[in-house]
Length: 547
Length: 49
Image (spheres, rainbow over the protein chains, first blue to last red):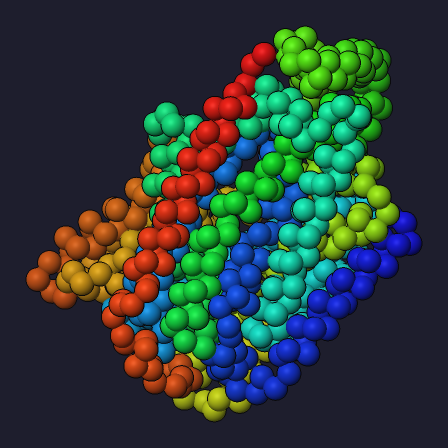
């Protein structure tokens, strides 16, 4: 990176953090520290909700997905606006009027302490590992692309986040989230323009769409109902609604955002704002990836975007790799000429044939990489940053790296803050030291934030060693999501249900989701539907006549 | 026990009335609009020569 990029990166990060701390001054009570004293406006909450969901890997991985797999991933978000309406209608007013700090606290008010404690432990386990991963995953990509030291990147990011999250509480988190979301959107729009402006003369935005479309990159909607296919209209609308209901309606990292609203109206506006903006925003992110694909039709892309893996194959299987590389370069040149002709004259057949040849050469290189490293090769997360670093003008590179940092920090800060809240409210003040003064809980919340921050930083530092553990716990956590949603559905619904029924229902929902993944080919978006419906059914059956 | 929060306001207890149903309908109509636009986009830029 050049000096101007460093300047943009440092000024953006320090500016965002400084502004967040400035806005959070005077958070003296527990309510102010954890719920911003219920004073937040809808647009800050809305941007914070979006920034929390958009992690660094979402930011760089989704553009990579647009490049490699096209735009069908947008269907994943089709259920989100439906979920926002349902949460706004049923969940947000109930959470507000029950005067809770955590979503799980609501379960105790409705049922009993064991249901609350189970739900809160599931959250701590799932988010506790997730926060380490949110710090580790972007650091790995930055290390490969920018040649930065992985541990140092984790330490700098971790220290910055812990400082403002612990010092300013949720107000600092949300004000920085709002700024970070704006930086992310600016970075994306800049990258989209840069990709289109970088096309050769005679290939405009219309021609770029034709080229991307012919290569199958613009298939945004698939109407066919297939429970085994990962993304289609139906899995997006039904499975996506259940997933978004579970994430935004039961996960403390999101519920806490809209609990800070100064009124129920502000809370509802923030959710609906997310429902309106999210789908077109994801479309733009994926379209950026598709335009990067077109950009690389006219500028040779690396055969393998993961440079370190390519170097490893080169040293282990040099002669074979060189042969594949020469075939790749020849195919690239054919594809470049044919794509230019296709954009100008509409003749796409030679371009598609050359693209197939190029993809075949890349497939052989991936095979060599997998043999040389002994691991599955996937470079989706490296595509967008390779484009940014090598082909964008000075200044813009700094802005986009700042956007990646912003995406990482906004997710991590929200997770640290919600982990600290669940720790203090659901466990410390409930079991360890009930009835202590307000100042005491605020101080313990600061301590819990620092604890979770240090834990995440240390865990991320050893991320490579914990890879399979993280994966396993994430998998178990995803089995719980539908069950959690089922429990909250029963809690909000007017039907008769009791604590014992719901507790067993959660475990049954977990077992159903687990069995679906282990013994069927059903795509993951349906697990939440199955888990949720099982919990509701079992919960209702076991509660009959004993609500 | 959890630290005390202020009691719920009248607004928090109020039922869904006024312009809320129209706003919810607008969010869902926008979603339907986006899906239609994306579908037409997929048809217009279908893969192949």
